[in-house]
Image (cartoon, rainbow, N blue to C red; front, side, top):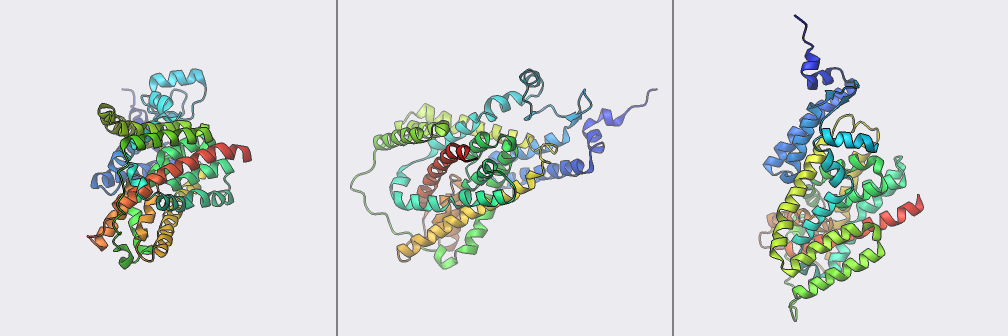
Length: 406
């Protein structure tokens, strides 16, 4: 009887045993990390919509490595590095997620879909209640997207790569995806993976930062009621504002026009009251795109792909960018606290980090623990929405100007 080669029979285990020790440890580590992400997503510690498919994708991709016909190791999920057109057509018939990756992820389409969904969910009336304050907080909360660039360059990244990883500080996944796709295609996959992995941590990490920087007596400050407006801003006025902003931003930054269009078409549909489209974009399109995004991010966390020496640097810079942005937002909140002579809750500042609506909800949750009577969510959402717009503008600036500099 012919001897059975167990390594060929159970190829996931076989490739693990025949891998370099570094690859083996990385694969096992990513499998365990994937399991942990699923658990934390199920518990609600991290965002379940992204983390559960991402975690299970990490488990599947690092378990399902097989011996390919040419003797190399590969998988049947996706090959993000394929560039030859003829080979791409073959891969798209074999790797079951390759068509989705090629036609939705690698061209930024899925980022635009997610951004369109965000637009439908945004009520810009929160922004209009105190636009200057929201703008100031949003600018302060861009500290990480700016300050991380020289730090990244000092660690050996070039200007394009530095700007791409710095965008993680904006805490807006579609922006990071779009920026890295335009400026640093060689690091597009790891930067996007790092970004979404860390964005899930804003749920768990930012509350500790707020408690560290803002004492309880300040967290308990009640916001004064907003001044009575002479007349309510109508849906038509908000629609015209969206159209004008879209036109202006697309004129200034055509390279980021798909993102601007996606955001403002979402807002326009919301303010036009087109309920069937609102239900479709805020439901199947947004949730479906986010699910597919999480799934693709998970299967892109393959050990061979993530063993680039720059990955550790990206992991460090990603968390630095997010922390700096949060610190900048809170410092902006303190500035408003002193300007208003103690009538402004500085916790609102962290909502300028444009992870909609996570940072606004985190801010309200922390404030409510200090003072159940303090309601800051309306002001926080205003800063949140302005943070999205500010991050989009910064994305346009980087994509437009950085290719001219280096």
